[in-house]
Amino acid sequence: MSEPAGLPKVVLHDHLDGGLRPATMLELADAVGYSGLPASDPEELGAALYQGESRSLVAYLDAFRHTVAVMQTPGALERVAAEAVEDLAADGVVYAELRFAPSLHTERGLHRGEVLESVLRGLRAGTMATGMPAAAIVVAMRQGHDSEDVAGLAVDYRDHGVVGFDLAGPEAGFPASGHARACRIALAGGLGLTIHAGEADGPAGIADALDCGAQRLGHGVRIVDDLQVDRRITFGPVAQRVIDTQTVLEVCPYSNVHTRAAPSLEEHPIGLLHKAGFAVTVNTDNRLMSGTSMTAEMEALVAHHGFTTDDLAAVTLRAAGAAFCDEATRDAVRAVVRTGFEAPR
Image 1 (cartoon, rainbow, N blue to C red):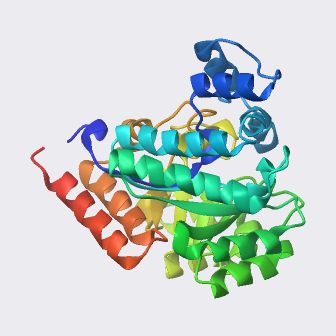
Image 2: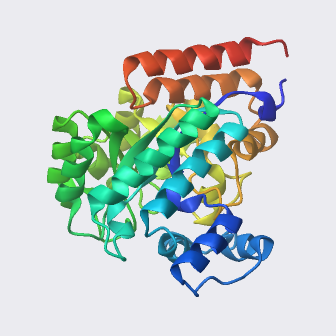
């Protein structure tokens, strides 16, 4: 089979504040006077922010206080966004949706609109430099109280690079349904809706996200808890709903292991879910915190779950088809993916 490094890739789930270059972090921290970074050398900083030994989603998310702290100016936001596109393109990604929460970047006086405009400028710059189309998914935090305002902002920029709305953050104690009105605002405004669910919570949290109108599920791997696997697979009611609707699962294997949504790469449910017919896609989530890339994620599927080139083509084409961008861009991305996978192996 073809080596994953040479195959085209599509990313639907990648957090902007989870993929900074350590060297950039050091420069940005120096520029704004942030002294809280745990190391002063790029290699040591990358190692310090690596969350492979985290024991929970909450512990994993704690590392973001450092990345967010240096992303509080227009220049920093624009630079980080542009570099994210460049780094993904260098890994063979041909389309990416990068997500972030504008409200987290207002600590130094920016308002949410300025944050969003800065990121969109950076994404456009990255696209100009690489030719890779990239779009933004605007995130509201589950534990916050401004999701309706954030959704409204996202809708305002629907024709300027924003393609979707998301709910992220701690799942336990903060159900998606607490932000149902924000989800309705996003959907009514023509945005795609993806909701983090099934990472730390189980089928009930997934059902709650679906009831809010989620078209894709951020992670969604704990849907496996609604399956009974013996000689055959028996689907529980939520699993049946997900598979009947072919709701896309934005699976992030390395991150799932690091947040303990899965016990190990070998025991990750992605192989089972793929074979059972779920609409699986593969993603990076947080390239810095999980020390990963799309190539690494694909290599893990090959090594631990027996994915063939045809399997990788299937999940990549599915991701292209599930992208929240306009139809013309979606068709163009699919064509690039097909051509890349049909090249001589």
